[in-house]
Amino acid sequence: MNPTSFVMINPFWLRIVAGDINVVPVSVRRLVRDVSRVYVHPNYNRLTDSNNLAVLRVSEPFPEFHNTIEPALLNVNMLPDNTQCQFAGWGATTDTVTAVVRPQQFLVTAPILATASCNAPAVHNNRVQQTMICAGALAANANTVCRGNLGGGLYCNGRLTGVLSFGLTCGLANRPGVYMDVRQFTNWIEAQFTRTDNPPPGWVPPQPL
Image (cartoon, one colour):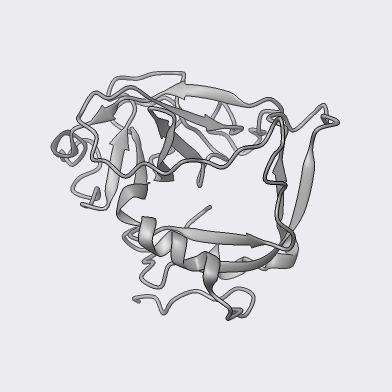
């Protein structure tokens, strides 16, 4: 999710699609659910992108057993630098105002980078916090995350490891993707599935000026 757009999120504007990896053509296996509730992390900060997570609750559960749907397993372990991961998304290939999302899902290889390297002045200049993961390439690389990919998942060893927060520069050098480290938020994520309150549409935690 775009960290600047939390204030505009209304559950009635969102739908969750499962069972199909492409936008078009539509698979006969595709299932769609309305979103009933949006839970934004209470410590989300739009200036630093810290705690940049939200959990979406669907109005009706997806089937537990389905030949093209299975739940994502959450990573719970600290992974060493250079672990080979993959980002899955549908974002654009160029950083232009006319860029459009891809109709077919694509995968980007994104090895985990040392936080110190990503926090270098020429890279992300100390923006990468302890609750974040930096992954991708420091060298210019055309096959990377780009416009339209915010909120996408980084998968390592088959488990959801990160949620893309910032670093969208479409292949420029020194701009690897930065992700929220899922393993540090598993308790909060799981707690959202038992909540009974319903935040008002567009709710976001109070933000610093």
